Length: 154
Image (cartoon, rainbow, N blue to C red; front, side, top):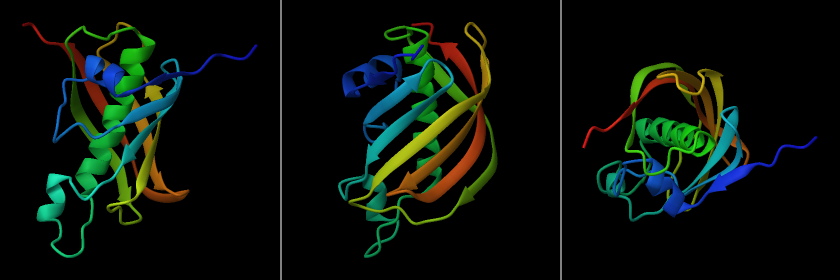
């Protein structure tokens, strides 16, 4: 039996994540396989504010924003799989481990973030993920990270 994979466009992403410009770092999430794994897409453009100073004349996407984009992909995966849209979801980093950067990412690149769940379950607050970010099949960054899922009390 083949499982139907889900996806999330920008409207679905914004219903799950509280992030907004300039810190919403994922444009689309595809191939959402429950809470097992998903792929995020980030179209990198020169309009992004970090390129003004990182680095003038040689724009390079900061590594920390690549890791954040992987984490946002994981958050969308969890939110989609567990039907948490419009539930005031907050996700906080708890740790980042085994993080390595392999390739520069810059304007015009399409960053593809593949995340898999290492530990976590529906109803649980603590999750651990592995992420790999690539451009045109070339590895740009990888990391393991854990996060706590919480809800805003507005």
